[in-house]
Image 1 (cartoon, rainbow, N blue to C red):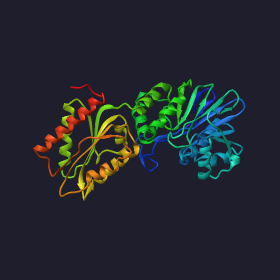
Image 2: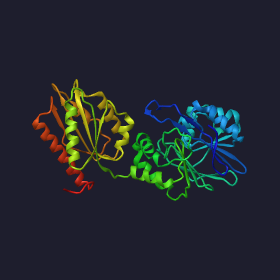
Image 3: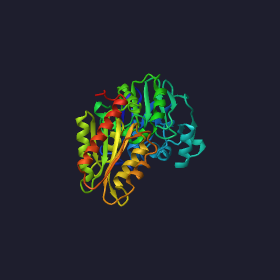
Image 4: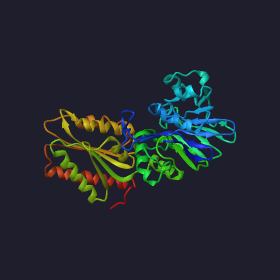
Length: 394
């Protein structure tokens, strides 16, 4: 990669990671990612905004060499290694550069990297840095998605360097996004940002008065249409859900699968959008994505020993950790000789502020009376969706 001109004297100098397929040893990223880093050249001073993952140090150094700049400031919006890990090597080249960041981020960087107080200039919410005809303004946006996060606004060019805010995991040679980015940005939000939904809403409000032409996140392409991604975030972080039921499930011998299939058909017949997610085939990112808008989740599992299938345990744990805006949850499944599956699953969702729909745990393969109970579950879900105003009463 080489550097790219964004606006006059503003350049993208980061790196594309075409081959990366897992992030933080946790998140699958089938489309790769990028580590976006930026140069802002004023008349008097030059600032580098964020660095790159240490694995891409050479790319960043090569881009800076091609651009032939001297760096006075290194603005770090967030302390994670994919933003900050290259700082020591950049300082070897630009030894007089000062790291500009907030108090919490300085604290983290001092723990993660061999840095001293002399390396830092600490800024607070609303502070600015004059580069000579280019003014950087700093806005503290904690818990998007760490407590140290801030964003940087370039006043004269109306560019918001938004850190992980509004990002996406996508390796692409295109500098700017198109509407195809929606699903990838939504998945990024679901996996990384959703647990902090309420706080993100407040941070969105802090950006409302900014006149923004371009949003430049730390991962994925940039946005020339900032309203597109900001409106998407307002929707995702709102309390509004859609007329959707998701059913993460596992079936070992066919009983639970038959129950799920019958429930899916029953809900479709009643005008509800249903997404069954076979956990033997569904990766965690797909589950997270579908959790963003769903009103109801039905967790379906066979009984393994005395509890739910391990894949269901993980899916339940993930849903609880991500804290989506679900309104309703239920449990269904089958057992052979007994167990505590229902108690264990319901005990794992304490973070979810939901109402429980009547569960259905049966013995063996479903029988005629069990199908009637599944019909009753479908009716109860429809009734609750009507009460919530998500669908009109029949």
